[in-house]
Length: 585
Image (tube, rainbow, N blue to C red; front, side, top):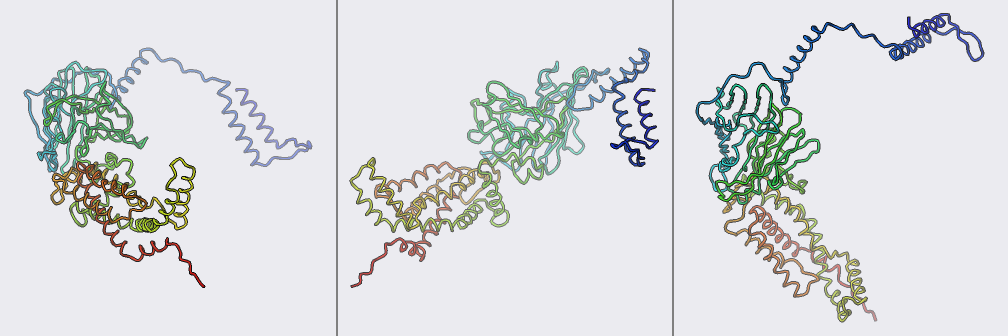
């Protein structure tokens, strides 16, 4: 028996006698509970310490033949488990897949109420992806695929390989097509007896969401790969279409949306990997993104493809993207509009792709308000912008009243300010007495509670909403090709320039009605050119943005007219008049 156990027996024997010496050497009997506690403590100590002093003996070795057989069985079992797991490389299989291929190039079409997708079995790729409810900037059906790029890069959903490539070009071979019974999907398969590849597409009626999977092996060994969409994307008829395309991915760990353009891959493709919620390609209003079905790492690769388009004959760098990275890729696939309601229905994660930018704290509620007014009342986004602008201006009216009172006071103080300026009229800007002049003017403002910057408040209040409306019109597909009266597209410029002209006219009128305190005649003349400058800037701006500013001007004119005819204006002017002294004899 080990020494530790002998020691344990001796201690237990002493405990059973019930004798223990105390500090006064007096013997007393331990209670049963105390004995059990000490026993368990010592037992645990013995069990913990024993392995450090006594090593367990190894079992006798099995015969070599038996061990080899067992290891082979375990290796085979492990290989089969690896082969079933996406993104891994399986061991070579004994039986290569039998030859499978198409006999001639064939086209297969999937169509529902939302889109029409045309497949080709040469490379198992998509040649057209037309969204039925949207048209391009020329009014033609919107095809998201750049067919002109096919001569330089492959069609969408072609294979993109990493380090190891198969011995045959899988983007050019003829696959055997297996359409689904409901006509909403197709499987493509190819094998030459050594290299085997498969792609599977599945779609759903009434949804922009589908499913896609792919797998490649050679000699029984899985080959990691990506699926690419290159040569541009989206509405290629729009002006500067090449600059509006981006690759994108959303990293939930960083809670950030990464957006890359073609210039970032000018020298070489740019790769990123992570547990992304989605990754793909976009333009301003549409996107094609892969949504991983697992939480594993996904690779996304951005390309710069110098290609022509059906609308621009000269070649320009367009963005391209490839997503995947595993030997077997399985994704949900969204190809459609960046409509927030649709994105929420399909997958809430996709809403992150509609980026309202720096002013999102204002822009997103503003968009929701315009959208709600459109759906609930006017059923026109132009009139919705008008109503929301009126509501915003009336909500800010109390602040505007304060600004108007301050401007009225400044106007009434001009005789007193002129008297101060008269006393210092012959001094230069560097004269120390100039500071005394400024101090007297500021003391006068302070005495009557006048804010010299109060006249800037109306403009400053409009600026955040101006940028918010600009963002809404830039990223909201609801505004794209939304008409209002003579305007056919609120996200584009007014073709007849009527809105910019109306905006300039109302800007002039509002400026004439606003008190111009503290300005000489030359300054007032210069300020009269400001509406022309602003109007020139708005000539090519989105019609919805000009409509917002014009509506704000009209409401501002009405508010200023109302204020000028109230007792509040008269009281504000009277409050800064110097008190008259009563001369009593």
